[in-house]
Length: 175
Image (cartoon, rainbow, N blue to C red; front, top):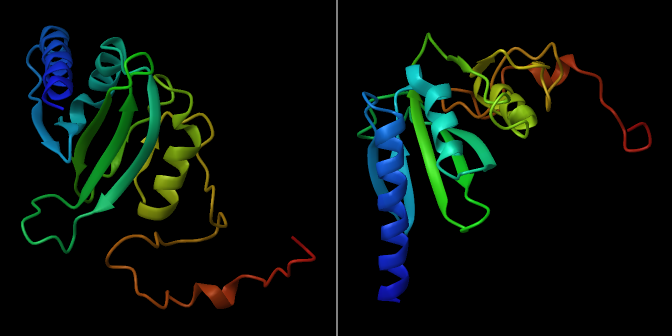
């Protein structure tokens, strides 16, 4: 098992060196959790960092999500935007994270880097209200267009805000 860890740490060292060269001047904070490598980067450098991660071999976006940190005891930011990246050739994964605060919840769309970000960004908007500027088809994916709230935010009431009564009930036969 130690050989596997040393080979993965060698691969990570190569990635770090390549990214340091490509992203000179951008502060990257590296960490690991349960053998998953993580890198935090500033939201202002989102597209630049995502393009650099792709150039460093992370050619697949496997997931994109957000975390509302409102009730986390030591959190200094409101939202964590999480990109799960994969190097298809080596199998190496990278969790790339950036942080956002209200009222500025707008970041550039990653669809220019990975076309698979399309529906993932729409889902994150639906649930958290994070706007992806430049998205080719930015509209609600899971909820009706008229829906005004973002149900995965920690300040969203458990029973909703009365919106369930405002939409027609669709039966299984009608769907």
